[in-house]
Image 1 (cartoon, helix red, strand yellow):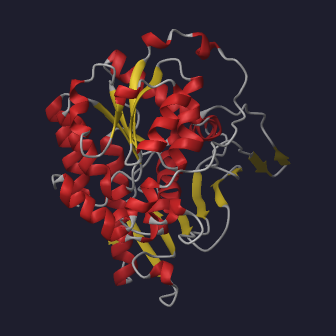
Image 2 (cartoon, rainbow, N blue to C red):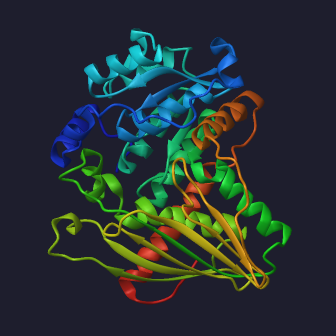
Length: 385
């Protein structure tokens, strides 16, 4: 998508794709979170926290991410951006956001004049990430952007360049890299508890239902989603293989299977099976699917032991099992609010002028690999990366 197209052309685009309906729909009540007890973070002075503008008030923003701000030490919601005035007003009242800090997609650029906003968090469909990241950077705001980073490598680079030119931070919201169980898995692998790692399997899937869930409307439209299950879910398997090994793949292979008679898969793919070969010889076998329910797991196989995380990338529940020749054990790890940890990390990077753990370059690496996987699936050949 051209990140500089006008507001009028954007409205036409949304009408053509149906996103206008999806963005305007008011999602159901926010899901109750398990992190409801009073925490030390709640005792912090809100006025000393960095202000975040939330761009896109869909299901994920309302039910998962926005409620997490209550557990943040350094971040708070100070502005909302939505195409639905009623939804924005309702959420502004719920989160204590001043009504003057409600924006729509046409007047978004005027956010540059609002000192209450330090960071813009983009929670829009993938096809709109580049436009709003670039506009936010030009408005002089730091950017936290949901993953996948953008539809193309070119868009990703434009986002990076825009933030660098503006002297602003750009972080991609890889929540699993801030989640306690995943961090524990990485630590144990690095300590050598599994011995030399030989292979990884990682699987992610869910049923996509654009007729029953408005949050899925844009996911089956290539202009908005960039692709199908690989972009939406396979990125978890891909990114996990990278952070678990601490290496970058050198070669990919892939196979795709989609039922062309299914209207969901007219523009995007259903299932992709892909393999990654790493420099050390580790092989990762990964899958993504829009027709299998509730799969979010990985297993790491070492010469001494294996480590299983299932669920691995859930919002609130995780389970780790480690097995070796003597049996299995389930380490006791405390669940944590990965969303709050992610938000606070972004705020700390701004406050302390540090580079985010998951900067724009991290997002670009995944999109580059995803494009290679699509090429391998299309050609049936190995693709060097």
